[in-house]
Length: 324
Picture 1 (cartoon, rainbow, N blue to C red):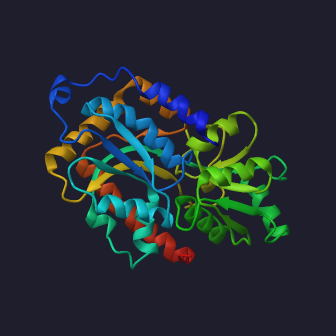
Picture 2 (tube, rainbow, N blue to C red):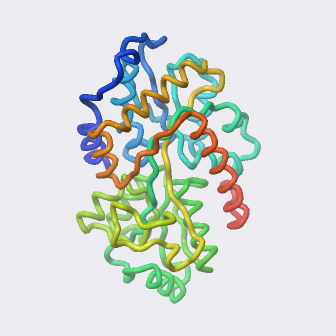
């Protein structure tokens, strides 16, 4: 249930009155329904992103767009299902950093994300929030580092599974700060966040969409954000890089399709997403979640995916991250 209220608020702002060009509305989509597959449980950041953009995409295509959660294998089960689906515009993948991370983390996969998933469109970029339960005696990154060094292994850091952007960000932080932390994996961010709110975990590096309501309500204490600059939604909160120069983490969301999807369909999907991202309601929903819209062409999103894959490969090597 964590994040459900967030999702409902997002959908309320994103689901109506999208002003799409008449030619887009007039063209019949080749299937009666579009499904967006999310590789993680409901209530997590990827799920929120999918449910925020789905009404806009449906309005642009003129067909219902449903979000389905296909949980398993660090998001690889969902990717595999989309890779094997018909390239007819009926099934899309909600992509995130985990897909570019998995390319390096799981070298023996029976698919190649960069080859088998066609880039469609970016949706949004969000920072991770380094946050603690109020019982943790740290109110800044230097406080957290000092406490972790004085209490090696005591801090329980919750995260959503091996190879997620949260996991990679934690490992990079641990490596750069030379800390001993106890990492506690969960099937998804929603479950990890629930334990953090109960005080059963101490720290999270969590994407802003799922944590912002709790930060604003004072249920969690934000110590830093992980982007290259301070987050617009939390301008008073410093970045990790202000303490550890060169540190950068974060999350992003976009859509991919099976690789043989016709160019005309991919182009129209991209246009529908970009039109949705220009809608004031969608932008307001993203703002409330601490996210920044990520419009652009198919080619631009493709170059972004290539760059992210290379960047994460270097971080995984540096931090010595292993699958499982």
